[in-house]
Length: 236
Image (cartoon, rainbow, N blue to C red; front, side):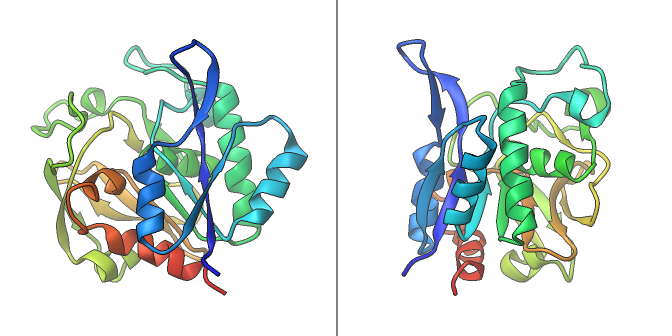
């Protein structure tokens, strides 16, 4: 049987102005293409329900989304902080911690990587342009496309390096990034300006990427190996 991969939902207001749980189809289609079965885990405040949902899945994807509440890592909001949603943060942190306790494979993408870093005691740059004023890279593109925007350099010996090589092109849709890595996380990729683009856990199958591989897969299969690696680690 194909492994069930939990897609941890974000929340937003739908066209009827009603709160809704959502995961873009680009994420679920990437998991299907990699050989897994995506299962959307809806927002809930029910701690027992979160535990039950986590036990249903062999692996997890935490997707991109809004900014993380800086109070979770001991900082006051900066003037350039974007929209935050503390109940959503608490939900996704709870899912991650439950999945980590079971040592399940986890892939954090963009916001998802930031949530994981904060869960492990790390901090974030609340706004990259503020902290990297001399950078010539535009990390937050104004229009979502399936193209790439800049190079990243991958650390030799890392899981990402084994999968993708030493230097790859990625897209860029973020204005926040890892500052201080959380416990047992090591940086595995950086942009040319030094911004952290990926990290991995030293003991557990937890990988973080700042770019959006699910969007890149709408154009080609360059990032398929990243999702296949997650799914393969979830097989019995």
